Image (cartoon, rainbow, N blue to C red; front, side, top):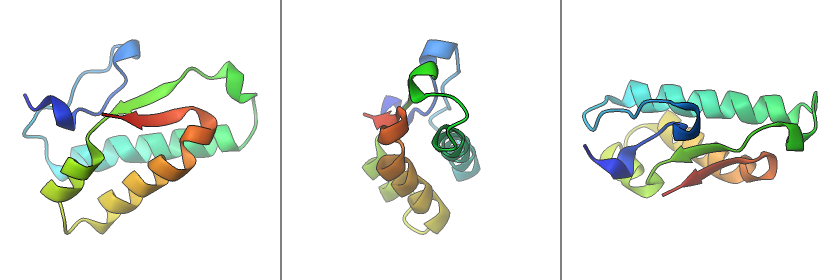
Length: 92
């Protein structure tokens, strides 16, 4: 398995995406993170009430593997730019 392309939340028992996962699997996980960001930005609860949401992914490598996916690139940008303010982070 290519650990650098892992997306998930291991602290909550999420399983790793397999190394041969198609782009739809990665986009799905990133959409979930985008929804999490929007929910937290909505302010229904204080940010401190939410657990840290971590996506373990090498974003640059993922971009390189899928250079023609505008949606994937946009989602990676969204998570990278808006996520940290609400404890949704990507780390390598």
